Length: 62
Image (cartoon, rainbow, N blue to C red):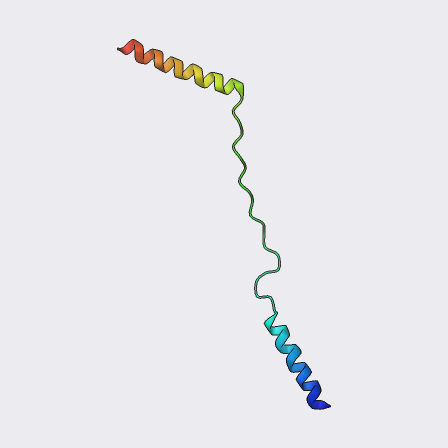
């Protein structure tokens, strides 16, 4: 009977050590990258005005 108990303890102990978790249980989730926001109409108009002004300056220099 004693040998049977020792065998059970050895098997359960070995199983516990094999299944022991070596890494932390909870890892911090990685944040997802946010998609860039769409430009607003006012910003688009301002950019177009800048491009037109630069084009006009380039034409005037010629």
